[in-house]
Length: 156
Image 1 (cartoon, rainbow, N blue to C red):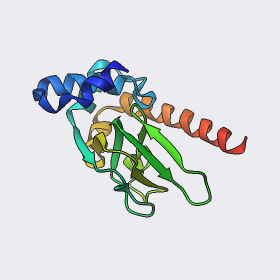
Image 2 (cartoon, rainbow, N blue to C red):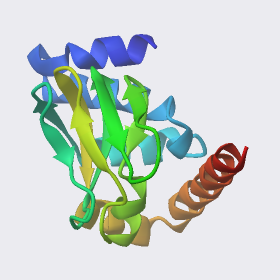
Image 3 (cartoon, rainbow, N blue to C red):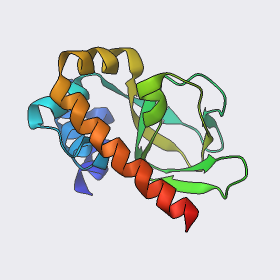
Image 4 (cartoon, helix red, strand yellow):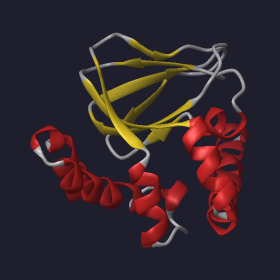
């Protein structure tokens, strides 16, 4: 994923160049697969970078969620009660459920290595979705597909 490699080096880029890189990263994510370039630019416009040190918690199970994370560089472990830890790496994401419903986190996510993420905060995201119903529909369809796949994997 060339867009991820470029984005992980974006800390020296201008805001305009970084925003363009983020559009490229976002379009590679299944969650945003149905979005137009215009919609991707809107999402990129509300995104920010965050860094996490190795072994630091990024989110904690039971805490109120309000941020979506796209891993640009590094790896994280998703820790859920009664389940095997799940490892996520560059190009993968977490926090999409809390982004949409603002409810408590269902898992703890810890950085395994130094981690660079693209983050999207719930208030700005919800305002954007309210103003763009086609964007909301495309994201909801992808979330339903993702949840079905997880359910099938868990029952196998």
